[in-house]
Amino acid sequence: MILLDMRHILQPSKGDEDAEIEFELAYLASLTLRQRFQMMETKSRELRALLVKNGYKFTPRIIQRS
Image (cartoon, rainbow, N blue to C red; front, top):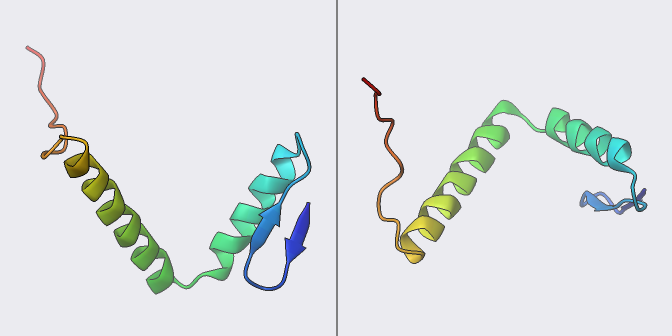
């Protein structure tokens, strides 16, 4: 695994999933609570935009089985 600069760019070795997971956990631990929520909101907006773009205007609803 190679970490370039402080911009958190990860170039993992092939098949080095453990190092990749450790990097992700260290990165998320370095964020403040506000930054984590902002990232979550940004990703939610991106997913919503992708759903609309691909013809799914509404998110799936939970249907109770009887």
